[in-house]
Amino acid sequence: MLLTSGQISMTISSCVVFLFTSLLFFSGYVLQQQTVRNIQAALGPIKPVARTSHSLPTQQPTSDVHLPGSTAPIAAARKKGRPDRAGAPVTVDWTSLAYAQLISSPSHVCNAVMLFAELHHLGSRAGRVLLYPNAWDLRPAGQDGGRVGATEHVRTLLEMAAEKYDVVLRAVEPLLDDADVHLPSSYPLPLLFTLTDYDQVMHLSPSGLLLNSSTLDGLLSEPIATSLAALPAPRSSPSTPSSILVVRPSAADYHDMKSLFASESFHTDIELLRTHYAGQGTVLAPKDEITLVLETSSLQRVSAHFQATAVYASTSYVHFSDSMLPGPEFAVGRDDLLQAKPKDFEAGRVWQSVYDRFRQERRDVCGLDLDVWDGNPSEGSNPSEVARDPQAGVELKARSFVGRDTH
Image (cartoon, rainbow, N blue to C red; front, side):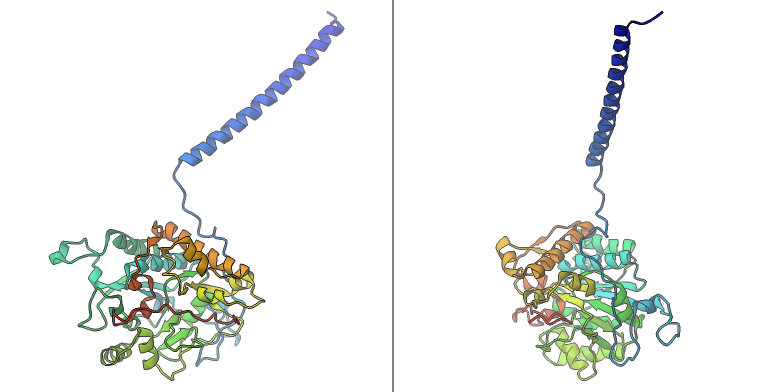
């Protein structure tokens, strides 16, 4: 049967309509499924923020670092077991080395756990030790003869550090037998010297952010010439704390400093360490191009050649040291933040980024938002800066930016 021209036209038109209708249907179906998946993802549980998602790049070591009393350079290659410049293989016993955080205030517990979490994520092979006041007692309040225990959240954070990040928890007594067990100044840095089951330990001054552990691992693995080495060296006041301490634990040094601490008046425990080790060349002195530590207070005075990318590339540890702020753990008013923020655009961008990252990591690791600042110096200060006399007050000192001319 022959089709007329009108029937042929109708058939072709029907096929075209059917084809486009089918395409429209399938495209609508695909969009519908995509929408359903998006809704399901939105209604599902929130996934933790990936540790590598922060905008701050991590440090790649660019040069070697020399320690006092040693002619051998510290390079990232050495900690991985590759030969040094002399061609001899270097073997590191990581079980004898550790990062040790001494916390004397509940406000610093989260930051210590944050540092250990970052060491875990960065793959550092050194041990992790957290020293806390024995008076906190990890058992619930009311048990063990009515002793007042740590708060529930402090206990949770300490237990999480031990279980999730392989942190060794050690309760310590005050340095002096008659000290107030509830005063942060009763637990000074010489307590690090009690860790005699380690050859060397590194302490990072709170509050801070760890950007990269490779260079710090190198510093930790290189034997120091004395029982204490510090970075940075203060350019002005000898009482200015150093942000990184490398300690060779010793029972003899511990008892000597305990006697010295009891017999003389020291404003801070850092002054005690400097007095005990005076003249022994205990400064970790990196080359000029190596920064390692970024003091946030140094961003207030930067040179015309300041570059954010250079700071990120050379920084392993960020130490928050702004004298106008209580610390990154505390929420302050917008006006106070604007006043404290560096006026230089690039420096201000770095400053804002490290504060933002600290707040995000605090949420990710500890599940905490910022605390409310109540004006108590012992809660917002570096423990090494807290005066032994509670009536003396605390001065939050600004520190120099190591390895860069900031004037």
